[in-house]
Image (cartoon, rainbow, N blue to C red; front, side, top):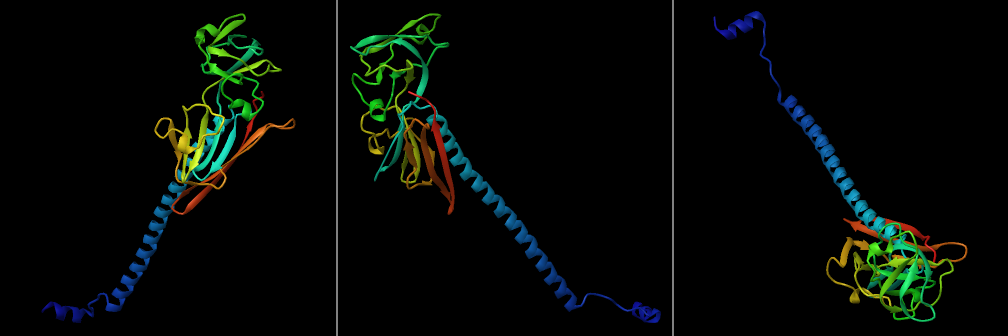
Length: 274
């Protein structure tokens, strides 16, 4: 007896998938595949967006933190701003160290000052005494608030008693400081927004007229790129100190990437007093 006859005899029937069942299974698998694929694509896209936004935030955070940290250590009344077709710039004079002086040349020029010694070897630059205005800070020649470079060795400015600080050439200060406060400062620093880039400029000479990007250094390390791309209508605003409050600097710019913009605003108080 053949197998077909045996199936019939036992009452058994052949079973399998019909065409309709196969089509239903294929459609269901397609729906599930589309859902899973969409979930994976959305997850990857979300991670990519998060990484991009984190990169934008990191770029702006590093640039802003550096500017805030440096501006807080700026010479009183040295912050000034200017904006023209070439860009917008903020300039200030950094403080390297400070002490108290005993006597300085006011009535005539001299190349030495008597000062209270430093507790540790200072970083050398120029002396600044009683910077009561921005115009006074950036005045060059003599008499002027800021002197020629210091010629003394840093180790010679230490000691238990009054010590002598020597300048590279004779200098006269406009007036005494009521608190007899003396700062050691370096050359000016500028931050400029040029087109869609934020630069930091250093190692250039002090001038009564605030320099703009066309007259500032053009190569590294004297010109360092801090953020790109940025956008700002008025990135820097400086408000002079009054009897009621400290000097203020407002920083505002946005960092852009892939049509996303992160606006950064920061207010910096300059607590240093002349």
